[in-house]
Length: 344
Image (cartoon, rainbow, N blue to C red; front, side, top):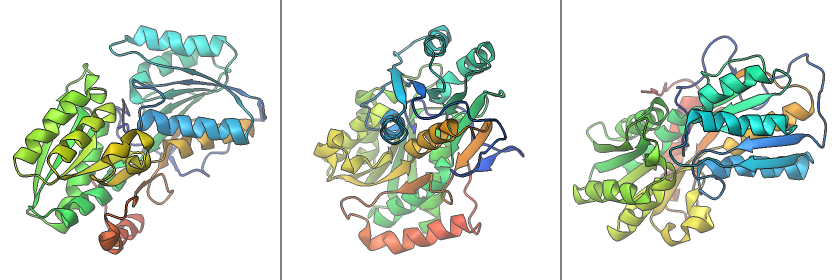
């Protein structure tokens, strides 16, 4: 939360005949318009580079493109409580500055991308976690968050000694519902009668739930006090508070978007993070930029799911090594179509 986080995406996954899956989908007959040396503009969601989650994953993909594709970059950050007009101006600033392509990180940019892309028909735009913004020059980078969440839900149920687990969502929006639905389905596949506590930190239009560790800590604390021993957070920057609560309760937590137990920002909590649902925004961003440099960008949605390697779970710290075979069994059943994971 996005992935998710920090505003990961209001729309629930791709769909439609124009939807492609995975990194290799997406070649068009358009001639190459850019090679190495392309100027890339990237607009972050709340939290920006350094959030240890969703935005950092996008930054990783951008950095890879700078290194391997020799593109130039300009990064702009969002501010809490800003208006759509401010988002539009950020995108216009990049497009007017000669940056092409322009990438918007997060569903909060949906309306702004749709509007500004019409004003700059020769600029290619990409938006992460939203398929509502449509246009001939808009690529929608989508993820099957529910599939990765199913796997960590199974892990939570397998590791829970109390049969009581929790889910903390940053903001009550359809994107985060995908995380919750997958988590619940995975946990119940292991233990049909498991107790699952759930709480969202804010309701739209208040998106502060993606950047309020204090609220995350309070919510998780309440769950641990009520008997939970594992809590999964899809809450962006608020997730740090969930980890704090887990440490205080001598309990366990599950990270999101990045392998959070491996990040320096969460070094103090790596002992309580048993796994993370990995959402490979870096892969999607790099793929889009690589396609741009070869002139093969395709508009519309591309969905990064388990089969395409777009979502997964982490094993850093070895805390779920004993249950890995069982989780991988579920993973193969999802990839093979034997298990269909709900999105709401």
